[in-house]
Image (cartoon, rainbow, N blue to C red; front, top):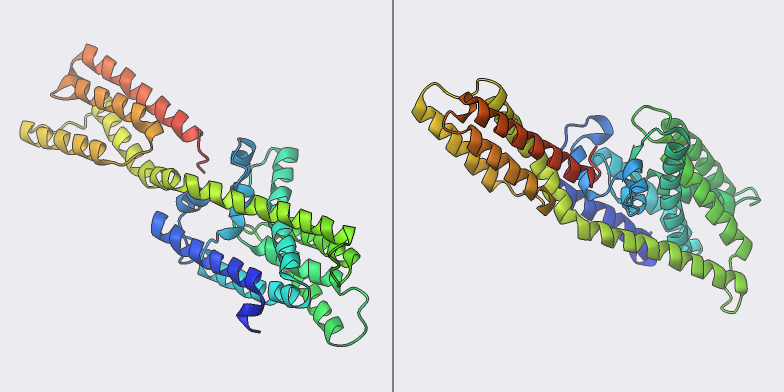
Length: 340
């Protein structure tokens, strides 16, 4: 099947791979096994726009779309990319590029919508990534479109799609795999298939149903593109935050030990080197602008505790208060994002 006769499908799959590489380069590799082997870290996925239902309810709506572009690991993206090329390519060749764009966008939002509905109903947060819901939606759309086909090649292919859908929904029941994403994508894809089937296989420019479907496609696909653009605009700060989160917490913890524990070296020269190293690390660390007040408070606490200041009760108390301010400011700044 030539790639140039299915531009939407090919473009979407290419975007999956581009995003996969960029997230790996920007946020590092995680330690997931199985489908997540050789994949990005959790912090990198969160920074890139994984579906965190609590974050979506807090206003980060773009995650409803961007989650479909992200994958846990190499096997995960290989599985979904191959399924999309086959299923999406079939829709695009037999029907149209607009139809496959409609199915893809509807399925992506449908999978995310199912996870959001679950959180709204149960209060249980969900974290979802992957284009599996889109693939399930494409399969469900084809299954609907080929309903009633006589025995033959299409009927046989429809039976295979039906088996694939059942298997994917069953796989979704395995812990760590999103049943809601699969089921929501399949339901949305089936709905899109019904609408395309209702219009019929022939596009008539003046047909009202065709114009309505074109408008719906433009809205859904446009929303998807806007969501990706919003996520790309936020990505630099999110990735900076993801890279700085661990080191910043570690520096605050070291300062906590200095103030509340006995972390100061007995050798004055070694103590001076430790203080210089801590200050240099804190000042060198690249952090989002919203963390700067926390860094300033931490540096003030450090100055109060430096040069044996932690042994002076008044200075130690003042340092402890500023350290507490640093922690609280840091937590509030992190709360404005969507950390896992």
